[in-house]
Length: 95
Image 1: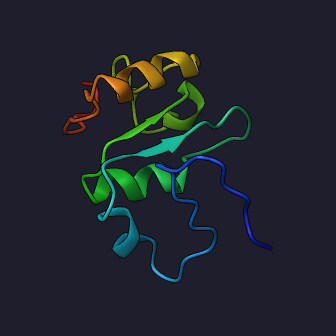
Image 2 (image 1 turned 90 degrees about the vertical axis):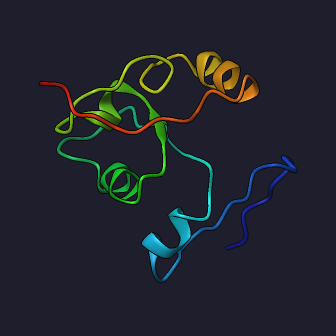
């Protein structure tokens, strides 16, 4: 099923054969996860490929939470960070 996209700057990929070769093409990924348990593989894939990931605290369970604006439940904070072009970081797990 094709995803309808009304946002010109957002590309919805749907299913891809090799996630690693896709993730490295982008400036960042978003993980707006609000439910579930365990480590989120999409977050791990982004971190391994050194692609910044922004998400909810739930998205970072099991890997350690980065600081604002990368980890928040407030989508307005993500939008602000994206608009100010501050989504550039190297993930460092908390000690």
